[in-house]
Length: 237
Image (tube, rainbow, N blue to C red):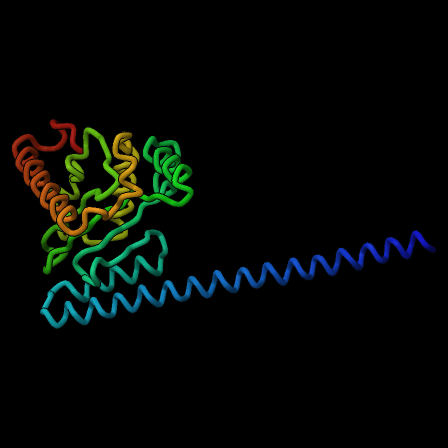
């Protein structure tokens, strides 16, 4: 009988511990859910502010961009932030899992994240035109510095981005293709520039403007080159 009582007591204790663990787990889940909801609400509030400002300025592409942005948020595939609540300037975070796990770029970002003790993504800046998708977006790698024979000052030697067509205007599809392009282009995070992840944004708006202008000039050169040489013969992607 004592053995039975001990077993019964032990089982009761385990049940109590299990209930406590379950309660803690539920509390953690509730906290995470609350944080996720607050995050989503902040993002949607940013969209509303950006949309109102764009409409007030008569930005032709405002409705289209809000539609694209909401679709991205609902899909949850990419993390997108509006810069200064502007519908025309986005930052897109591509974490290591956005790329083929066997690619050097995915491994570089994973190593950066481990070293930093936090997630370190590749950041794309996307500048949309007021008449998107009829005019091309300016898309470039903002940070960290990436080296590849197909990346020039952050600009991507990618036919879609160099010889833009309005039918390319599905932004989620564009980002998926960019991720695949970077993964298979042999892109690497430049070793000497890995400290950029920690110092991102330290140079402020002047640095962002310089990066944008450099990328724009690189695209102009890429377009001139491929207008002359074509894509297949020049090894373009």
